[in-house]
Length: 110
Image (cartoon, rainbow, N blue to C red; front, side, top):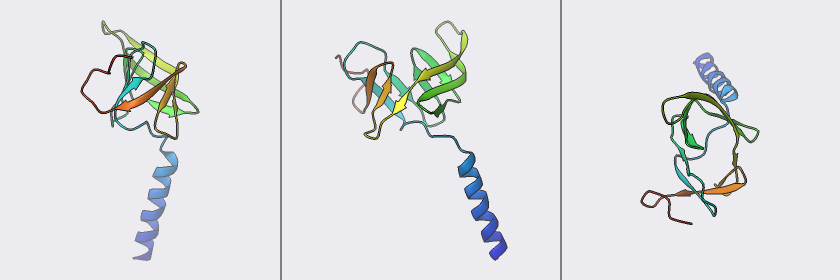
């Protein structure tokens, strides 16, 4: 029984060590000032940013990266942009602060 417990603890620690930094909470993030598109986050590693729909996004050292993003018209491009999660829950991208919005869509006008 001790061996099974130890194996379970080691497996949990190992999976945590390999997991990358998490994306922000799921939802729609509206810009505070400025007229720029909102940022959307889903709970499965998806990110809508700069009018791109991205899958498998990894956030590390203030950069959001993904191999597969889709633009209007279906073209596929990689993603490598600045994106910082702040302690207060806001996001910072391209000089603009974004806050999680829970009201009716779309984001309110600035």
